[in-house]
Image (cartoon, rainbow, N blue to C red):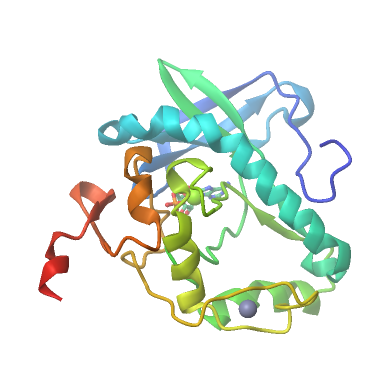
Amino acid sequence: MSNSSAARTNLTSNSVRIHTNDIIGEGAFRIAYAGTYIGGNRNNQEAVCKCFKSQYRGLESDFFRSDFQTADKAIQYAEEWNRFCANEETILITRGDVCTLGGRKYLVEPLIRYFTKFTSNNGWITDEEGWCGRYKYNKYNNNKSRFELTDVAVCSRRCSYGPTDLGEKGIDSFFHNHVCNQFCHVDGRWQRSRYTNQWFPKSSSTSMMRSSQAHLLNLRNQSTFRSGFGGILEENSDDDDY
Ligand SMILES: Nc1ncnc2c1ncn2[C@@H]1O[C@H](COP(=O)(O)OP(=O)(O)O)[C@@H](O)[C@H]1O
Ligand SMILES: [Mg+2]
Ligand SMILES: [Zn+2]
């Protein structure tokens, strides 16, 4: 992966100090703490260290089992994109590291300044202002900076990428909200179905699901989902009323 155009350089730091009293942000499932890399080529650089909230620790092993696989798949897509995009549109993806502290696993990644959310795995997509704001800023300032993506999710038909892989219904929900633009169909390969649905509550926060529920993400299954206790996706039991 070392000569990849899309993978952010690997960290050689030995460890990270996690500042558990300094919360940077919070998703539905995890808390993101500030941290500092110790040693190596990132010595003293700021980090973000994410761990599952205690009520969602059940998702931890599922998540960490597939996390690098997910990042590597996204890096592969980004490399394809980087081959034809303009310089200021280059995408760089953080692979992250796993660090265990006090029996808990943390996903450690470099802090991104001016963090913006563009999309999430449940179909939520930011409005055009959000999307283009950063891009225009880069272009206007002739900035060498690139788009850095972190903590990516991949939706696949077979749900192969862990609890953030929302399967066919994740793909369908994305297209339900996606408006084609000049970047689509560049090589004529994009497929999209004509009839789409928003299967999940739309949220800028990443949605997750237990692997035992993966069969519900097949498009042949009609269940829609609601946020259950604290955010985990649950089958919508009101479905019969429709
Ligand atoms: N690498 C990062 N750099 C800066 N801020 C971050 C980074 N990763 C996460 N954050 C912040 O922490 C919040 C929680 O992140 P996360 O746990 O990944 O949840 P979610 O993906 O649901 O937003 C994000 O919404 C963002 O505000
Ligand atoms: Mg995230
Ligand atoms: Zn499109």
